[in-house]
Amino acid sequence: MKRVHLALTVALLVAVGCGGTAGGPPGPPVPPGVGSVAGTAVVNPGSVAQASMSVSLPVRPERARRKRLYVPDQVVVGLRPGAPSEAVRALHTQVGARVRREVPAIGIQTIQLASGADVDRALTAYRASPWVRFVERNAYVYPMATPNDPLYATHQWHYPSVQLPAAWDATKGSPVIVAVVDTGVRFDHPDLAGLGVAGWDFVDHDPDATDPGCPSVDPDEPSHGTHVAGTIAALTDNGVGGAGVVWGGATAVRLMSVRVLGEDAVAGDCAVGTTADLAAAVAFAADNGAKVINMSLGGPYSSAVDSALSYAYSRGVVLVAAAGNEGGAVSFPAWHPNVIAVAATACDNTRASYSNFGSSIDLAAPGGAATLNC
Image 1: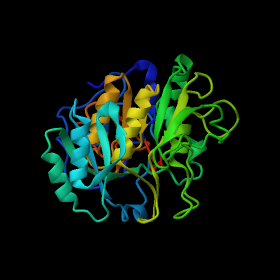
Image 2: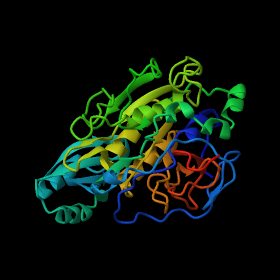
Image 3: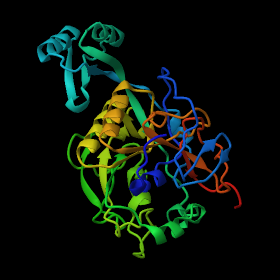
């Protein structure tokens, strides 16, 4: 059973139960057995024992057609503990590469190859080194889609279905930091005023993790990260917008915006990240006080991300991710054994038709528009 801190139940109520997953080489097999979290949910394909909450819809088809798998001319290298810096520098010189970024806590380096370099040849060279524990191409990750129903933010049909009003009578959460690893958060929204703590923008490489939107591709693109942040902790009982799961403003829950998804003008997409940035973001959040990390995104298996997840888990962080929305196998990082995987349900508590499913699901939660007359 995966670790769950009762005081951090907010995490179990946030991760969207769908995902945009890029294709690619299969990762390690999903651990067998039905995942469960006591008192919350056990999910089998097509049935739900008990539901929590999520917000999700399938990725818009026009976006899915443009998805790219790998970042051109980049690889991610995982170094063995104690690797001599001189030997590592010599290896990079041999390959004709330079280090773009290093995350010492998890021994990861993002490597920039020469433009048009033979990536397979570089991978072979790194794998031959005794100081390298893994090397992989830097891959793209994509977010979970947000609802396009203009009434979604205030309709909140899912709150009564998970008995949230009754839960608020017992507790409104605990004073913890929740990291929203996403497109960035707009804390100038009146329902998020005063809730932010220092984060980081891994797309623009600066401390301002505000979602800048998607000006080149779609200026009207809504802020996915702001939507997720509002689901977690929107100021509640203030006569503005919607209510946050943790009755925002009453429990000292704070939000850390960690931006990993940005505009990809080449592919014409509005929210694209990389596995290298995701790994760095998870380590950053774990090292800077986050007790919950929410990842409403998905991509191919990555050893770098795997290392970061294990590192965060070892520091007592609760990790939550969306299961995916292809109606098939659970996506990564949701199926990682240290991550709570959240699937989506329809308004009658059956599995949403688009939601991924399988033995690694831990929770199912209302997601997307209500497609049934409940």
